[in-house]
Image 1 (spheres, protein in one colour):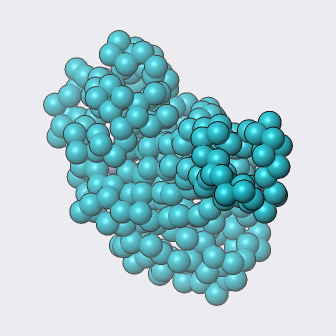
Image 2 (tube, rainbow, N blue to C red):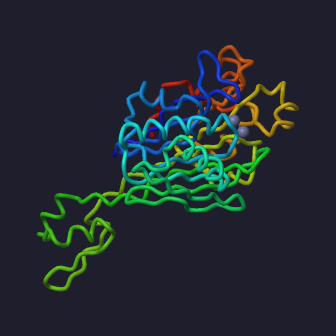
Length: 305
Ligand SMILES: [Zn+2]
Ligand SMILES: [Zn+2]
């Protein structure tokens, strides 16, 4: 299977701390990088954890709170200083362009060879926002103080695996093998049809990752994130502060675990911790009590799917 991972660059909530950067992470599918949110200092973390800025061409911004976007001007400035050319695609609320355009103009970055293409997010319903040969990315609405989207990264179905013994036995020509990997039957020269199931083993399972931050716990997302291999769900507070979580449109660790349980995901990582917590133990303990396969999204952690 191709390497598919998520690396946490930052997992603090509104206030950065001495040990935590604000939200940002890299989804890496076979050395193709997708940056999710870009909190202050994201470019430092990218360098620290070995991601070349030149390889980032797709950035996904959940919402326009500062702890998710203040890293963008610095990152783009460094990209242009380093001579990055071509296109940089940013999937974000449409107002981001209104903020970035004058800023980049003021910084004299707008004349650079890097062309920034903005793709506005849809906050009313789930939408396919990106697709390539291996992956689709959907956005879906969350429930926060301002419009906010989560993202679902899902591999495209893999090809079936050929059964070498059967391929040899029926002398299947090379030119027919691509179609068989795609599910086709094989017709012998005498007209007999060999069913695909006799010629192939099942394909590798499709893997999926869902990013949900910032948000109240939201039942409407359950069918979208159902059964994902890895769920990142914000857990800003412990449940004793659930009133504060409700008031600020955030989730508690217990609520994140409830979402993970109800969506039957395989693994949960929690983050976006309030700076009031000196370490993540109370949050992870609270979530683990309900959903045992929970880990903290600490800086530098890489989660393989
Ligand atoms: Zn936030
Ligand atoms: Zn927010």
